[in-house]
Length: 311
Image (cartoon, rainbow, N blue to C red; front, side, top):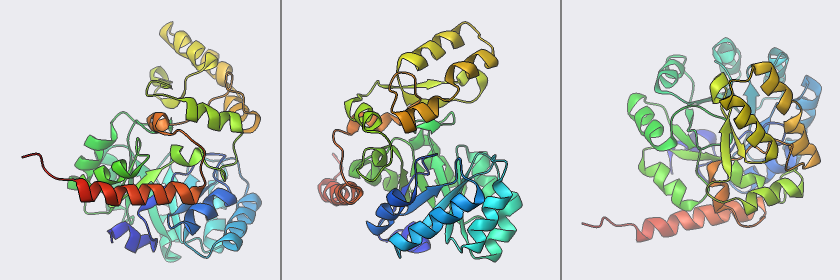
């Protein structure tokens, strides 16, 4: 058993990524019930919505689950209070440092796993006495850093003494084994759970992932310092072309305004931002969450049995 499974009290070292505006109770509970760690996102929620979602997860599973705290949210202090009041066992954090909230969370025995994208951030988090690190490479969907998963994970494993969870570009059992070989204790996966029956996105979004190949995702926003990976479409192609002409941030922001909603709620494949990772090309069908996790864990066992050095 890896240290992350012991730390989180889960069967398999698989964490579901905190998919902004998507990870709600049905998906979260399904992942936890299947032996992974379901993660509830706080994106777009007020405190009462979060409380309601947490209570729904508790009704649907007796297994551990987490809440992903997006630290730049204006109501983040209220959301942290709800997490503490509802005795959520685990939090993952992103978009900032959790330093301000660590004493309150630790007092409640909440396990803290920040999502980071650089060695210097890993060292800072270790100094703050967090419990583990989710190390995300630029292969991931959504907001990304500059470094790729494999070199980043290996360097952070060597630079810290905390359990490391590898994220970004991992979507099957081969990826799980590769991450463990790098010294990670487990993996976080987001894109693979988008194409599940329990995921509450439109079928058109899921179909875009299934139809994707290795070149279907692109990164926009690099010129602004806020890179985002999503599935290429008409609108994002326009965005890239505008970036190349040094368009203003206002012009670029206006182009993509409301596009995440269009993808997640309306299923607009041409004017919506369908955030997804590079492993989209590996996904060929819509499955249940249980089928996904069973496939990953079974494949990982088979890979380990067959693995041998070619010398």
